[in-house]
Image (cartoon, rainbow, N blue to C red; front, side):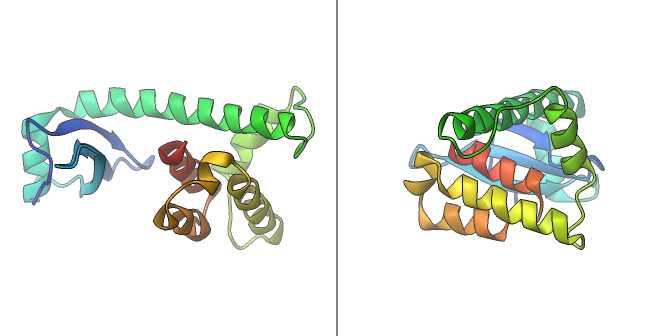
Length: 157
């Protein structure tokens, strides 16, 4: 059952390039934001209910907006890490290298796994992460890709 309704629905965005799952953000009774994942399948009741609240075009547009916000969060994280002396300054290849790492990430490659571990350590050094709830810190620990990690950090920061 879809938790969001016309009074609580905030947004919906695809969470993968396959466009097979939508993250739905809604207001909870306590006023905080809640999240629910819905499979893109016209036969599923949750998806049918979601389509009463929004359209696929709106989901696509919000996905683009959210991707841009996430990229800015990555850039801000990098700037903060530079200011904190945790990483060196960026060079002209940095955005390309970061994109290639995210797009081609493979947990089975030792170098990639080590880099993900380093990213997690850097994330835990951020003040907002240090102040975050235990559940959110656990999500960071369980992240299996840099993109998943950045999505979690975007929610926290």
